Image (cartoon, rainbow over all chains, first blue to last red; front, side):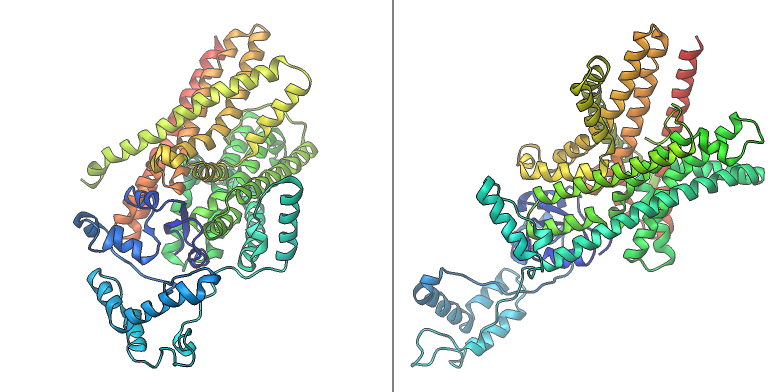
Length: 391
Length: 201
C-alpha cells in the first residue's frame, strides 16, 4: 500500500490496518467530503464500511455514471454489524431485537434484502444456516438468552492500553479538574499508537541526520566532479546539479522512488534511503555549485577548506533546509513522525494535541540543527553575509 | 500527440501553483513588511518578539505546517465553507506564507536599511529578490500534492499512473522536473541580470 493515497473517515478503527500497511491516508470528518475528494482525484481509493460504498458508488442506489467509474477493489477487516442498547434495556428492547434479528436471519429476510441491494452475502448465508433451526433459539427454561455457542464474540477493535495509559489518564483527569482543559493523548495511551510514535521519532531523527550527512557528501561529490573531472564530467555534473537543486522536491522524490522501484522491492527501509538520497541531492547540489563558484572567485590554488570557509553561510542554509525537507519523505512511504501521527489521528480522531506535538517536535529539531550548525560555522569561519542559495 | 493532448491540462494545473504563489506572496509582503518595520524601527521587546516570530516561521517545515493547517481547517469546519479543493489550497497558502513572510521580511528589512543610508538604488534590489521568492514559492507549492491539491505535481502523478511502463513514468516525471528547472534557471538569470543592472548603475 506504500505510495497509495486513501481517503478515510476520521477516527475509524479500520484505519489501523491501513496505517500498518503503510498507506498514505487523507482524513475526512464527513463522508460526503470524503467522496468529493475521491471524485476530485485527491485520493486513489476510498475506504469505508461497505454499506456506504454500495449506497454512494457501487450499489444499485448509486447513479449509473458513478457505478461505471468506481468499483470495489478489495475488502478487509470483515466484521459483522450489530445493534446495541443500554444495559438497563437488555431484557426488554435488547431481547426483542435479538429475537427479531435471529428470526430475520432464519427466515432469510436479511439475505434476501442483501441480494436485492448487491451486498456481499457469504456471511449472511452462514447466519441463515445457523438460525433457521431451533437449535440456537432459547430453551424454554432460559427464556431471555440465545444459545451462546451460536453467538459471535464482539471483536476487539480498539487499541490495547499501553504501560503509560494509567499515567496518561491521571494527567488528563488532573488537567480537566484543575484547568478545565480536556485533552486526549492517544499516542501515549494505546499500545499500537505508543509503539508507532516511538518508531516515528526514531525514524525522523535518523532521516534528519542522514539527510544532513547526505547533503554534505553530495555537495562534496559535486564539487570534486566539477574540479577534477574531464570537461564532459564537469558539464554533466553541473547539469545534474542544476536539475536537482531547481526541481520541486516532491517530484524529485517521486523520480527517486520510481527509479528505486524499478530495480528493487520497495519497503520502509528503502523508502527512508530513497528519501535521504533525494533530499541529499536536492540540498547537496547547491553546496557543490557554490563551492565551485567560490573556488573560481578565489585564487585557483585555493583549498577546499578555504572555499568552505567563504561559503559557510550557504552551506549552513542548505544543511538546515535538508532537515526541514526531511518530513517530505513521508510522501513516498518513509515512516517518520508526520506519517505516524497522521496514522494515529486517522484511527483515534484526535487532531489538536497530535499536530501540536508534531509541530513542537520539528521546531525543536530544526532549532537544534540551527544551533549546532551555527556553532560549527563559527568554529570554521566568521560568518560573512552572502547570497542564500537554498530557499 | 500525448504531450499535446495533455499540455493544456498541465498548464491549467500549473495556474494553481501560480495562484498559490501570488496569494502567498501577497500575504508575505503584507506580514513581512510589517515585521520588517518592527524589526527596523522598534527597539526592545517588540523587536525581539518579532525576530523570534520570524525565526519560528523560518524554522517551521512548510510540509509539516501544511498538514497542521489542513487538519486545523478540517477541525474548524472550513471544509464546509470552502469545499475540499479550496480547503487544500488554503492549507498550502498558509504553509507557504510561513516562508514568504520570513523571506519578505528579510527583503523588506534590506530595503529599509538601504533607504535609511541613502542607497536608494540598492534598495530596489528588493524587486528581483521578491521575484525569486515568488518563483521558489510557486515551485515548492507542489507539496500540495500530498493533501490532494490539483496542481502540477498531482496532475503529473495522475498522468503517470495512466502510463503503462515504468520507463515512461520516469520520463514524464523527468520532463516535468526539466520544465521546473528551466523556469527556475530563467528566473535566476533574470534576477542576477536585474541585480547586476541595479548595482552597476
